[in-house]
Length: 180
Image 1 (cartoon, rainbow, N blue to C red):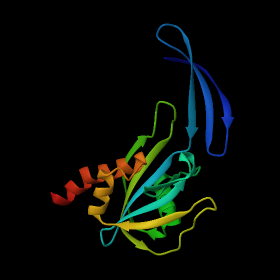
Image 2 (image 1 turned 30 degrees about the vertical axis):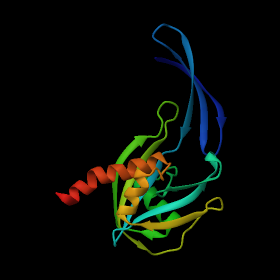
Image 3 (image 1 turned 120 degrees about the vertical axis):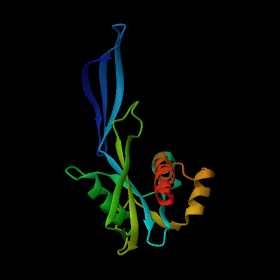
Image 4 (image 1 turned 120 degrees about the horizontal axis):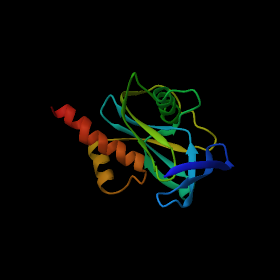
């Protein structure tokens, strides 16, 4: 499709909604709705004793439902994704590490949004500080064994696609590295 024009329909604190007009292969005008957002990070954390650091939090977008997952948050303007991952991990869990590695990047739903996510692996986590939660955040930190995480993954406990991808990627790639 050939781009013609776009206009902003709504601009909020976290999202921008635009209508973009394109010409399709038959010459018809098509209006597409796009949600523009800042990039985001997610952190799969593993402690020095090989426990996975998960969080349990309520997500208002899905009915104020409890969700198990991994720490995550947006990349602030001018911030690199790795620094955002270090910051979000510390704020949401109180854990810190010197071993932060990018696992993968992906677009959360490229059919309608440009949201790019960066998934990091944080090894050797140590709890050093208190959580620094925003007023809207209620986060419970949970340390879980590898076997428990695998069972949770198999049983559909993780409703967040980012968490599912991070864990699956880890077990398919990083666990193979350890066994090599």
